Figure 1 (cartoon, chains in turn yellow, cyan):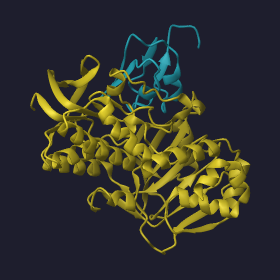
Figure 2: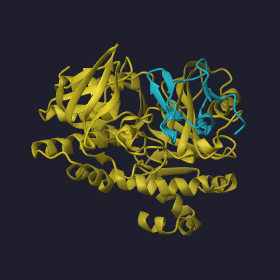
Figure 3: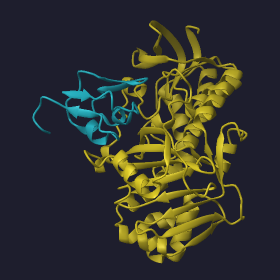
Figure 4: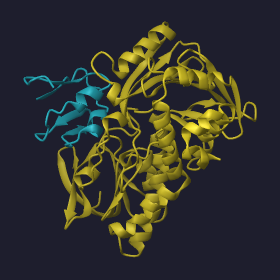
Length: 398
Length: 60
């Protein structure tokens, strides 16, 4: 490891890896540090991503794809099921990844492009000069070293600390943290090519429960509930166990993980002097689906693009780096976060009866584009009342 | 004060993200609690496993 880089990336998830890969490909000197001793583990993810979204960043490879999805289903609180299929029958719409190998591949590609990589290396504090971020103090197996950089990219995930140490409030409101738990269950009867989402206040208050297939007879079976609905005796694990005992009594867990997913609005500002914040650390998770992989990669790539530009011009001030903040906010991803935030806020306020009625209104939907927005539009067609209830938001969807 | 039941903790970092004081930090598989903790109870509430408990203090 050198003592100075153009870009220092903190965190080796998809956001950090794409930032490092992009910057290294541009010929910048880059170092990516990961506090854990292995890239990709432990997994904190349901591992789903859309087919088109993934293709924007990497060629699909069966080494890190667990299963291919051709459809999805949404189950109402009363058990009514709505099936979602692509208008092109049998069309691949998404993947369930194997994050342990996917994350490694991305970091591998960053390293291949010329980035330094250091695992079990923790950013313990920022190096600040007159309020400007100049690098980080790193700890590796008892060694402490100062590494400076023109731009630091904070990609340190939901448990992000770096931005906070730099003076940015990253606190997620209690009601907007999804408290999550997930089993990898084997020996279960599932449709191996369809994801399933269960809604309802008894099943997953202000969140949802998912079955994301990992193979013919195995799946990620997980849940996210609102932090405000969590407490002693009714935590994410309690809800998940209740569902699993009832639905998959013969299921065998080969992995159990927990995690938090933010479904709040993104940080008010995602840059500071010498600092760019990406991915979950910037709170750019899709507030409706809880999906974070794609948004992390989008912001990671843009962070590297803007940082490279600013470094070339010799100005990495907050004002110059604001091109990053403005860039992702005005992007399709940024607009989708804002729109989905409103849809989420609407949905969590609906009683079970209302969700039952919406899902009962149509048992099969063929979607031209497999996205949440296309789904909402289709639902509005059969439920005209939704249009009034969503108000100004509905108008913006047309 | 905040007691971390390390046999229960899944070191996921959910609690870290909601701490208004920034008093928690997840160092690999170890949750650290700093002195700035005000025993507000938010972290214990959101923990997916119930690994956090406040002890020797009046009930919240």
